[in-house]
Length: 421
Image 1 (cartoon, rainbow, N blue to C red):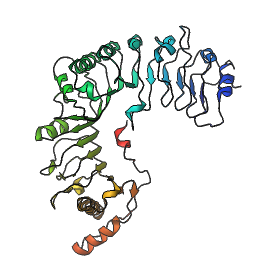
Image 2: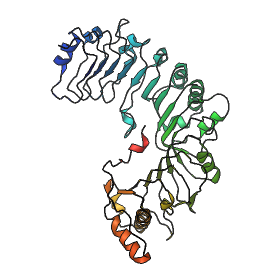
Image 3: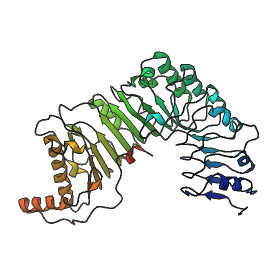
Image 4: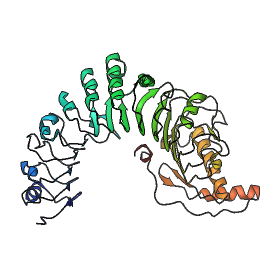
C-alpha cells in the first residue's frame, strides 16, 4: 500500500467496499489527511479508521453507512465529516462524541435542495461541539424551543442550514429562540432556512434591534414568505447572496435591495400577480451578476443602464390570466447580459400568457444580437438556436444590420444552480 499518501479519493468506485476500506485503515497510512469514499459500496466505517491519526477530512456521503465509530474520546482528530445522503439519523452525538474538540464542519442530510425530508435531527447536547464552524442541514422540526436556543451556544458558527416548520413559525417561543441564537452568532457568514409550506418569516425582521451577524454574506430562505424585505438588510454590508419570497413588492423594498453594495446574486420569489410593471431603474444593483425571478407573471421593465454587471437572468413563471402588455421589456438594456433562462411547466406551453412572455423575451434577445451582443437563450434547459430566425425577421422589418449570430455556450446553467453557492 501507499503508506505515504496524503490524499485518497475513491469517489464513485462502485467496486470499492467494506473490505477495501478496512485494508486502508490497517495499512499504517499515518500521513493520510483526506479520504473520500463518496458514492461507493461501503456500508460500515470500521473502528480501525481511528488509526488514521492524521485524518482531517472524511467524506462518507451517499454511502450505505448507518453508524459512526467516533464515540470514544481518543477518536481521530477529524476537522470535517460529510455524511449527507446516508441513513444515519439517530444518536449522532453519541457516535461522534470523540470529535467534540476537533470537529469544525459537519454536513448532514442531503443539502435540502429538493426535500425537507432529508434533514437530520440532532440531540440536545449538540452545543458541546463548540468549535463547529459549519453545520448543515439539521431538522429543527421535532426539537423543543430550548434546543433552538441552545444552538446559540455554538459561538464559532460561520455556516448554518436548518429546517423550519409551519408550527414553529406560528409559535412565539420558537421564533424568539431562533432570533436569540442568530443574534449570538456574531461571526455567521451564511444562513439557510428551509421552511415548510405556509411559513411566515416576518419575525426575522426583529433583527433590526440589538446584535446581529454583521459579516453575513448569504441569506437564503426557501418556501417561507416575507411581507416585506427585512429592514436590517443594509446593515450586513458584506451581503452578496439573497434568496427570499415576497407576498408583495413595494418601491422601498427595491430600494433596500438595490442599495446593497456587494449584492452579486438575487433569487427573488414574488408570490403575487403584479398589477403594474416592476421597474428596474438605472440606479443601484451595481455589483449584481445573477438575477432569478420566480413569479406568476414576470412583468418587468429594465430601464437603460439598469444592472450594469448582470450576466445571467432567469425567469420562472406559469400560466396566469393577464392583460396583453404584461410581459418583460427592456432586457436588451442589460448591456453585459450573456444568458437568459426561461422556465415554465410544459403543460402550459399553449397558454396565451406563456406565449406572450416567451415571444417578448425572444424579441429582446434578438435585439441584443442585432447589437452584436451575444446572448444565449435557454427554455426549460434547452438551447434555442432559432432565436436567429427572430433576428432575421426583425432585420427585414427594420433594416437593421446583421449581428454575429453565433451560437450559445455549452455550459447550460441548470434551474437550481443559481440558488447554490
